[in-house]
Structure formats: structure tokens, C-alpha cells
Image (cartoon, rainbow, N blue to C red; front, top):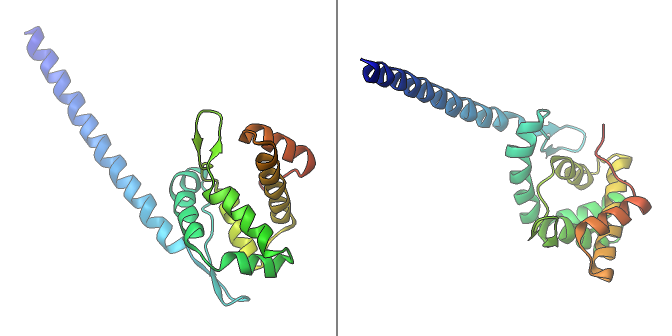
Length: 174
């Protein structure tokens, strides 16, 4: 009798787990679907589309930022647009883009590209559209300094970032 009761309990738990798995799969699909309509917003003043970072940190970090980084990597007009919008030379913007989106760095646990960051992706889009804030310029200053320091001293990301932060601080907007 005890074995039969245990099997019934296991069967109930398995059904509950299946129900939860179905629920989470649907919830994940719903989140993904909900991003589609908000992924582009028409910016009437510029007559262009602006990709907007989701407000929810989970959606921004896990779903939006990786896709946005791929779009930024594929974009071939952003360097020229950002240079024109900011007055910075194209070679600096090109160096910054390479540093953030393409280069591998000595990270804390591996040698790899930077992890995607929704705040950096959002800043890059604002810079590209010419609708940037002062903090986005601080990001350019920080990343330019960091890229030069990392290359010049052949150091890891943590040291280069620390040094850049003391000279050219940047924090995501609050």
C-alpha cells in the first residue's frame, strides 16, 4: 500500500511539474510576443524608428539586449551617423564600436566579448538617432579611454575599466 501511495504522489508531482512547464512556456512566448509591438516606436520629429529598451529589467537583459547587439553589429551606417550627431571623429566612434561590440577582452572568468548591456544598447541607439543625453557622451568618453588603456597597457578589462572610471566615469542613467 505504501508503494502505491508513493507512486500516486509522484504522479501528482509530475502532473504539477508538467502544468508549470506548460505555463512557463506560454508565459515566455507571451513575453516574446509582447516585445514585438514595443520594439519600434515612431519618432515623429526625426521620421525614423527608434528601438526602445523594455522597462522590465529581465526582458531588457535576457531578450532585448542580445538582439539589439546583433542589430548594432550588423549596422553599417551608425558610425557615420553618430559622428555627425556628436561632432566626434568617425575613427573614434569606429574604435568605440569595435571595443564594445566586436573585440574579445580578458574578462574576470574568460576571454570573450562583453556581455550585452541594455543601457549601452539604448545609449547607442540614442546616439545614432541624434536624440542622445549628456550621459551617452560620457559613455563614449569612458569607452574610448578604456579601449586605449586596454590596448596600450595590454591589460584586462577590470583594470582598464577601473582606470577609465576614475578618468571618464559613466553610469547607466537612473
